[in-house]
Image (cartoon, rainbow over all chains, first blue to last red; front, side, top):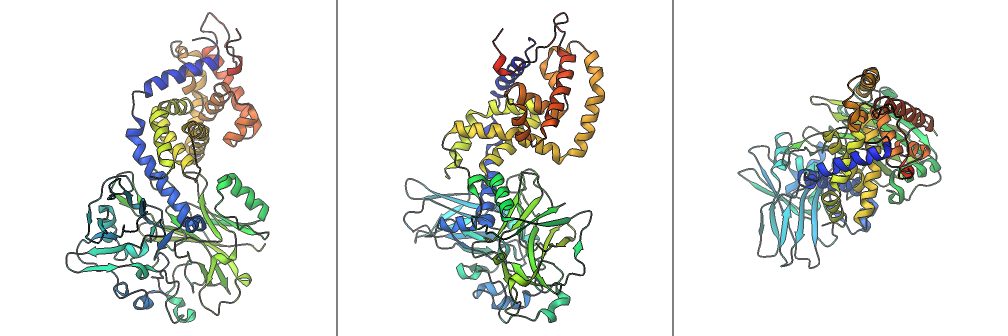
Length: 410
Length: 179
């Protein structure tokens, strides 16, 4: 050892590298890292870069925004197709599977993801002989049976089934997407030991509001979540030691700079106009730990009695954790929510960006354009005239925690 | 398989030991190095970047490692504050204590508070300038200078006179080999 610190560090590096060369980092952690990257990329594709997902030829079906909450439950029977009209049976221990058509010729791979979190549920890859191999997000093989018509019935990972223990509507909140336009949406099957139910395509089409445009006034007492139409904010600000949210108006230039810093040339949107935008951050939201990442979506963490709006995978393959959390914006008139952010068909939220600037960073929400908001009723009025609130919430287990803050005027 | 996956796999398989060693320099702990490298890999590959070659990916991951390390410190700032205070209080004892320990640069670095260690590695191993370190770690230049100055004092104290009182010549990579 000599006195040259640089050389000392180089020597230390060499020694450590030689020592680590006997370890198998890829073998020990490779699958975990791959899974985390897949989920984060999927989150960005589904929740942030929805436009990019569409331009890539995506077709997605999802029910994350079906309003199972106070306003939506009454409309359940009007949502979707016949089998979708009734929530999945809650008896038994159901097993989920997906019937996936692969007879489209040029499909090389496909995936089913939870658009709320980006968690990969199924990956399918075409082999040289034309057959498909299906794996879960960790690369573990899934049982798949090929039908005579070329379709596959794929048993979904056991962890998906565990969702049923806390929700009879698990899959309604887990939007499903495929990443190839030519792929018909998979049929989801639940078998609870008795009846087998199938739902396909339009059954999972988001339905922002049930038909009939229910009266906000009539339902106001039942609305307990600031994410929902009809909620009346009792104060301009609510924050607790567990959860808080802040918002500030930023200029278009500042927003572009921030996006450039975070995303470089991979900016989630090029739609930043010249007007002011809103930058909101939630503090106290469950942060990313291990493989629990990006559980925050724009969806309401309550979303009705049984729905799950956010979930992700723990470090142990096959063991799933529920960490629903939401961060979003709502438009209000006279303190009552009259517009909310409703993701599109593929789960995307044009006009709004969600991001964590680092693994453990607090989630940020950027409202780039008010077109991200969808009016609750036709009488909500112009979106530009609404007051804005940023709202956040998560399932603190037990109990839901909410925070909100009125967005200052530009 | 997505295009990024083979590159990520290659980085982990072929460059993993080098990246781990680099993370180890910063963290002073094998376990922390593994965690930091995992986070750096995830951060580097999660944002839609398209690496066309493993060298470019490795360089990006290597650059992400100090940022991840500092971010993790920020996330645990309360505890780390205590750690750093503890490190400072122990410093004098180390400097005047067990002479065998000062022969090991690993021990000397491990005695540095985390941020001083990070600045030291970036300055004297990566040969970055103070402004570059400040930019990479998200610190003020003055803060970086202070960390480097404090680290130099500590390292000089524990390493400087092992050869009959010779001072540590704190030089950069670019100075190595000049005699």
